[in-house]
Figure (cartoon, rainbow, N blue to C red):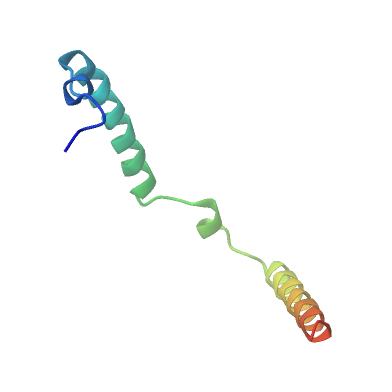
Length: 73
């Protein structure tokens, strides 16, 4: 089986510090994303009027979708 790239070049000792540095940054990003913490949408307490407005918007969208679906058949 022929390898399409030079494995020695990929793992060259001179490239190891850069490789480890990039890996460290990627791991830090993953850890930061996975850490529990405050998210704006989770912490936001929606008011009754905001909830009512959202429900009405969804109801209008569903009614519009049903109307369009029934007229296309």
